[in-house]
Image 1 (tube, rainbow, N blue to C red):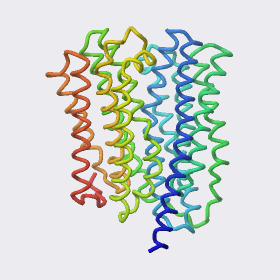
Image 2: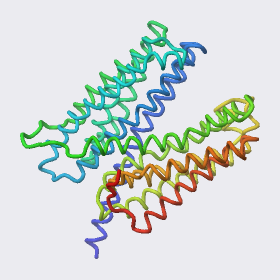
Image 3: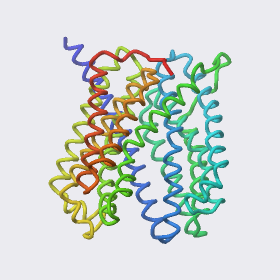
Image 4: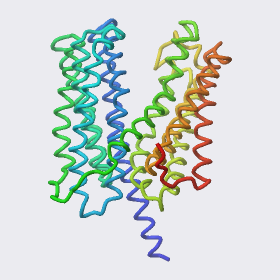
Length: 413
């Protein structure tokens, strides 16, 4: 019994250490991302900053490919025998090049459409497309590091990649003062960061018998699709508010949405640490429950703090002009926390090869859209309530599937 307690204590210490390492890296990354946004708003001016924000939104959407490569790569490594991991890691990195080039080519081909739609120069769109190559490769590096559960290196990689983007983009903007230059510097900084990150991750030389990655491309496509659904669930309410509410209320909603994003991103380190263990059928349910409890606890704290200090938070995030949104601010925090819980359950399905993982999330998107368009579109509180209800439904269905034992691989397309 003492030996069992000792082993359990050592395991808990390891998990805590891993969580701290990843949380620290992600915290640095978020601070750098926020600093980059603030710096760009001041350096570029309103018009160019609006164009830059639109291009960053394109990157955010395309990033689901990088996240898909990361998730599938991590899962493959976790389920691979230790003596074959070096070969599999090298194969994942090689395959990521295809996804990186395909993603960049897709945006490049769409340049005329995106330039007209977003009111930006074609060269700026092309610079954005180039930046997607190192972005997807970064996903492969993160996945191979996560898959061997080298969480200290994973935290360093997150901070390093964010630093490359921020430093490269700010330096180019200060030197040349244009959107195209900023996106070019962003891409170059990411290239440098991926180069350094490859050394940090230290993937070993591939073995001659590494073989093909059976099903990698299909699983990556399904994972990217599922994560795209989650991204839409967490973002479409802002678009609906913009379309359905008067401009002033839509502006207030946008400020509240910042709090929702904070509540969503704050517990990201939990998913990063838990996902490799979710790849094991034996440990998936236990790990998912533990991760969901941790994310839920963080969410409760965020909601409580937001409810207690809503006026002060609005003053910091948006200023006194947005004071009217303060009473509803806790609803935004609750929505972000609920989407974070949905993410935990979604990653559990991805770890279990569930190719229908996105279905429930898309149903949540449909529910949210239907509620806002048909009924709940007369106030900020109504729209965010619809978002909260929809996210709660997604989490409830996901939890029921988990406890019903529906955690075996599903291969239907």
